[in-house]
Image (cartoon, rainbow, N blue to C red; front, side, top):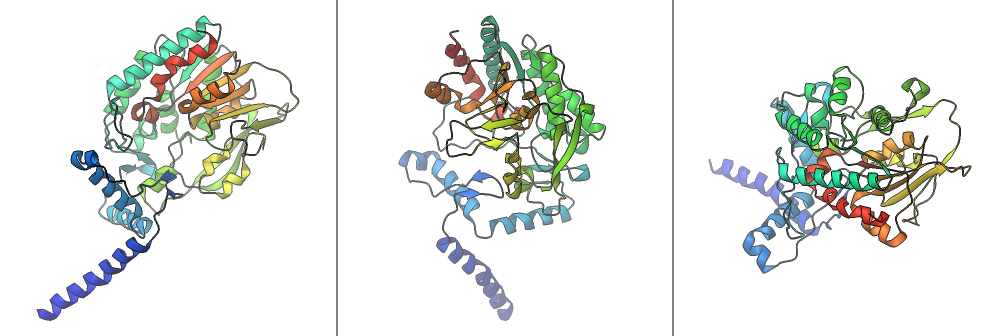
Length: 403
């Protein structure tokens, strides 16, 4: 009995002591390339945060983010969950054909909080936050239309809203969100893709990645076609494009969050217009240190973990796409998020593009002035819709156009 107790203590110390020493000596990482997110740093002590529990919450996040060999333990946990026939890990569902989808999101309640506040992850959302965002979008559309600027809004659904058939998980909350948005935006030029994407996914079309939260090049094509129709113009037919695979080793942010290590990577494609009439250039004038991209794609990004940055060089505050020959065309301003990056190359076949990240447009316009444009497209996915209040701030965008 004594020997058994001694062995238990020895094994305990053998595991705990090295981990504790490693935790103390290991420099704190600031960014996780695996998860593509910033990591919690050791928080500054503040009396008010200590009293309201914020400090302890941040300490807990710090411990979770900075734990030695964290990626190995996350992977081990996912293996254990799979062995127990569980189909969810770290708030990520695992479905048929190894389809992954984030289920839990840090839904915004629309209230002011300290910068240190982190919303709890949930599968619920706040209907009043969504309503306020949609009302702001309606007001934006009305004011721009009154100025003679054509307007469309595209709110891409989440993977969990599209890949319903891949999971044994109820769709009522996805349905409620999609229905609320469609009803609130019924009076504006809203491009609703949720139903169409569900049908195409069920038909076996590769419209959303399995390991990432974005749509694929094919999914982006279908969105492009509907955006063009919303502007009263005809898109290029899908048969006008050649599908070219550029990578077969894409493992996106959903894969990183889930921790499953036995998932087959996604393939990444471009849709190359046959007989494309002109060469294009992508410039990022707000970030002078970033190089000009010849065409639409940054092939160096395919060598990195963040392969989605292949499309237009990834998320930046502001970028432009134009023809190399300088021919002037109608100008489309896209105010949006990362979903717009794989969508813009299609739209650039018809328009000169000015893309500004939605959270940064006021800073960019204040510094450089608002670009003249003939059309405005807002692209803001459902995850951003429910986890931020950024869309509500578009109420003040028309002032840059005299409205």
